[in-house]
Length: 147
Image 1 (cartoon, rainbow, N blue to C red):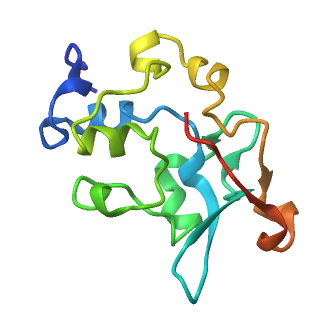
Image 2: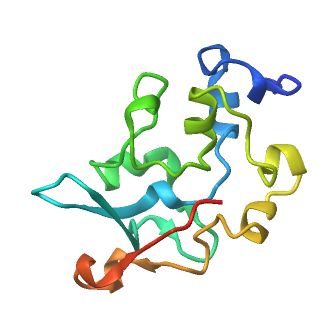
């Protein structure tokens, strides 16, 4: 593992090392929630239903390294697609940096505290249910207000 460069998050995404790319994630867990797409309009509805690998108490993947083996349709966010994934929250560091916007004030890279995302209300920790217990997704539509 290499060292993270000072204020690496201010660099263009294309210049980040793999380790820096991974460190850019604020850990909110919103990308690990199921979405419902309206077949007629294409509109995306958010739910409070988490992937079976998401720890609903911490909003962290239980097996991040091997997630694709257990959840084949898990989207691996890459530089190539980050600008086209419309359902990423406006607060998402990848989305913001792809648009050359700064990180939100509560981002752990700025605060030095991994719990700051929870205090800001941006994390799904403790606010979601696992897909293994949820039942029909349409019963779990929510409005996650962006922070």
